[in-house]
Length: 76
Image (cartoon, rainbow, N blue to C red; front, side, top):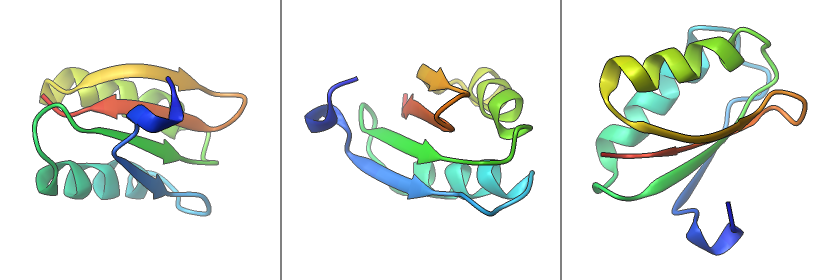
């Protein structure tokens, strides 16, 4: 994903699950449909929880990089 197409960034490093997903959910509630958010995380469980949250909530997981600890999500 190109940097200019990212609408928001969220730093969830240092947070343990479920906090990264809860913070992501809160931020998505403030965003407009079609906006994208790049979330940074260092809890390995977030790499599983963020995609599951997207499926459950209907938002689009654009990409996730477990090695770099980041994911891009689009609000639907």
